[in-house]
Length: 151
Image (tube, rainbow, N blue to C red):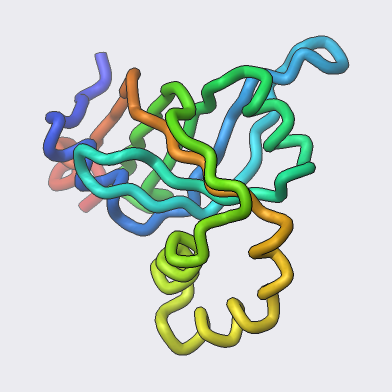
């Protein structure tokens, strides 16, 4: 059995900066899920926030499914991951500018985010903000092995 994280650990890990991998049911072409990297934001006890193009395949599939999953990982030893899945509880259309700025700053820092936001300002009219309430969590945390295995 894989070592897991406590509630506080998993929420703190999800709140850290990771590129998320969003998954959503895709009944097209045999039904394999659509899985794509995405920037997101999360605060412990809150909703997962993502933004995407209103007319994107991802947005259409999420609207149909009414839910999505997100997986984030630490890509260097000791390996850890959190996967969360749940229903979409709110859609802002068009995208919330404050959420867009917060996500950009989260991933790029204030200075680069300012440049990025200016260069992609048209996305504010094309994007939507989706909020997902975490319902199911899966975790693994190999830090307990780190001293003996990854030293």
